[in-house]
Image 1 (cartoon, helix red, strand yellow):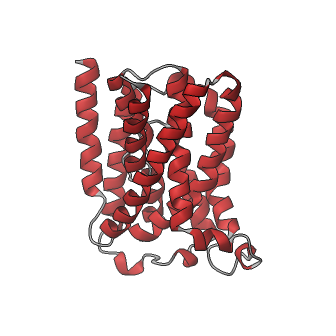
Image 2 (tube, rainbow, N blue to C red):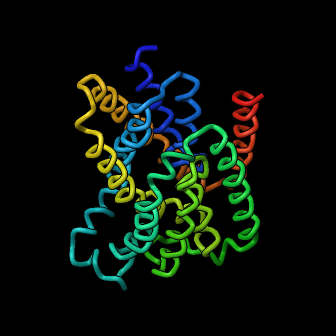
Image 3 (cartoon, helix red, strand yellow):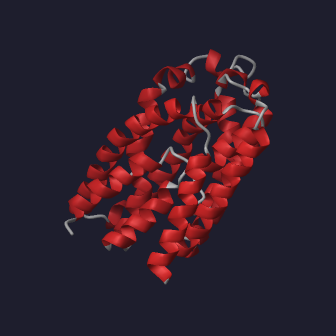
Length: 267
């Protein structure tokens, strides 16, 4: 199959799944294997295509990010600040830096995705169970999140290093478990994703830039543009969804997908 077409397909998959609690990495590994999109370019693509998804977050939350460049945005006692972002991202950046080579080498396979999909789905179900009947006690405003809650969400984000677990799934579930509402947890998750994903994207690009051809750079660009457009729509839809529905449907979807993936690749 033409690599430009593959870039469109995988970019769309990234855009749909990056900010939903279903594991974008898991989906891209599965789709990549189905399309025969493997090797070094596929590995780089899986990370760098997230750049387009990041830009969609910057557009949707532009006022929030603009505040971070003001004096008010650095005041820890004045709502959601740079320090909350730091608390939610530094733990996984530090841990991810040392574990990255091992994750790339040993965890990027359909089988590890199957395990991550199931365990992540069970975590979502557990988080919903723990908050059932407690909606009136949950934090419903991002500006009311404490530094302690941000740190705990950052720790839950460690789980996302396992492909298939889902960064948004682990952080949203973690947000519920530390006292946030679904929508508040999602908003916090999307904002703290930006620095984390930017670091991952540029780390991979700088490390591999010298070995990428012009055609491969074109593939990365196409995938990122598609991911941006699709992710923008996906985020807006998901936030409306969370106003009415729980995360259980995503948990059931993950488990069904895990069963299908295991059957397709191993039976």
